Image 1: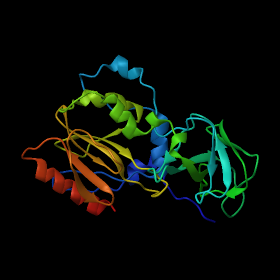
Image 2 (image 1 turned 90 degrees about the vertical axis):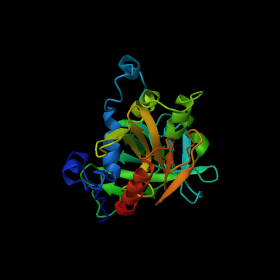
Image 3 (image 1 turned 90 degrees about the horizontal axis):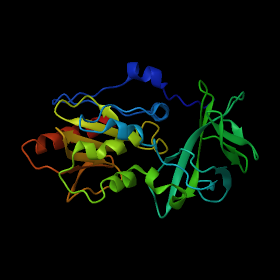
Image 4 (image 1 turned 180 degrees about the horizontal axis):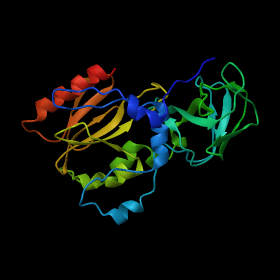
Length: 283
């Protein structure tokens, strides 16, 4: 029986694999199931003393890409219509390619067979007991978590079917509209809260908030975006998808990750090397 072995979030803190650098920097990849558990919490660490906490309490939690209007999801080769999703459904999505993205989500599914469960035409798709869509034709799950009775399903849609501001890079750019460097930490507070960017305490000289890549192409994804603050100022950011802030040039770290620095000082080279070491070792 093919079983997804992604760890429970409650145990992941005891089992996490840490990589320690000379600069006392450490971080880990986040598994798919752990990522989704984090999304459901809707909590965020303190950002900065200057942030208006009442304003932050009113920030709507986005967490990740969401469906804009009811949409048909096709097989990854685009030949078969598999299921429909309702507006507002939370999904994971790959980066756009020629106007299309592969999306995925975990839905409730009982399975008594010794293989992957099959979804049948007309079946209701549910997440946490709520309907999120309907199956259009029979197809097998991509993977299955026996302990949670959750099946992973994926498919192809046009990028236009996703709410633009549920894409973290778009949301961040909208929040910084009209702002120029230097960027203060408080300018990123809404993005950090809306997407549950978690604070990585392993960096001794920097405050780092991180957001992980989709699990679709890697079941144990690394960073999609990491904001690096020195004091109350954005020092730089690591990203796997296109993002331009200020007049920065990307420094390639490997494995699809790039580092952009907004500050030129004596710590620049040390941070670049730390990030390169991390990328080399994490994969």
